[in-house]
Length: 418
Image 1 (cartoon, helix red, strand yellow):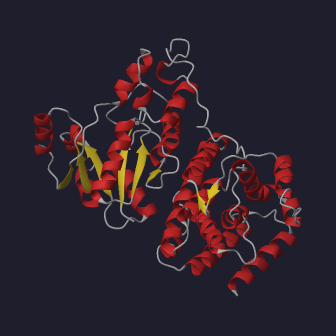
Image 2: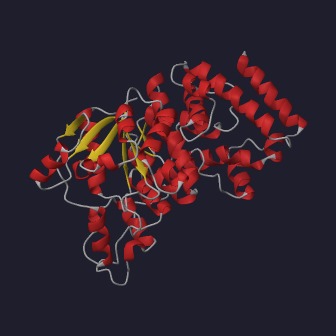
Image 3: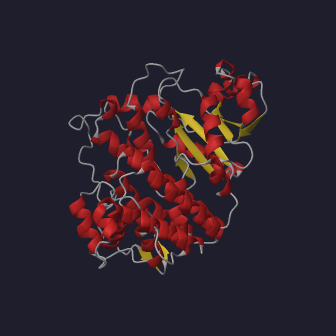
């Protein structure tokens, strides 16, 4: 997969960021852009605004249902000052891009690139993409003249908006709402970020119906003619973001993206894979009582293992929830959600793809040989390898597993080797 990296403080994300990402995808034929928010930029120490987690969540809220864009929180997890060279090494190791990843820079920072840490090493690892950011054409040319490395100039339209402008407009109660994606706008208002005051706002009565994962009302189905509606995917993704922890949501979106990629590779329905991936953990934080209530609605009761570890019911519970809440009845999608934790006998192809994605998405720490295998093996070979690796990890990690559970895991492992 051909990847490009767009880093920044995203304080907050605005339409210019997404417009730039879209231009790179359209003009240079990249498959996916990785958005990487800084924990703290070496060049913006002390910059005002939202917390790193707020900025990460605004990014997530701004791109639901778009598999061309993904998020990576490596710099936030590292904390401290963020250096691009460290991020590039992590991206290459975990994502295994096809060829060098692209690194998107604005011409406003090209002239100071030599001040970055290890600029020569960065130049060896990436293909530079320099986009127009400076409205002054002559200033842009001067900046590029000072850039000492080979690059591709992006012939993009300049959107005259900046994060500083957005922050200042919010603080001054000026019009700002359509300078940011709607998902980010809701978080800014809900959390009173950047000095937002609802009482000072001239538009405090903003209506939000239809944008937050509304319950299925019987008038609109999650599927039409066998195709999952993008509107439904967006609603489910927004719901997942609202009920999961930020870390768990990021895992869910990474799972959805890997499921999308696997489905495309193996000739399966990628939208269904994405939907199952984004929904698979939506009941992860539910109480044991709610898990049992929802899971038993599928008519199967609980196995001995599920009684021993009720948390295993979260996949079954999620399948019931999306069917009830969003009218999703596609057998393959529901099976993939239901079986993503333990697997099941005679799993379908989509369910196998989602199971694999859940276990080896890019934020997971896995064996390098398994990561390499995931790039080339056929679906059944990859599924068996991932399943065997998961069982071995569980048995070695959880000494509290009952003898019955270990026996069941061994039997499942043997069955999948046949």
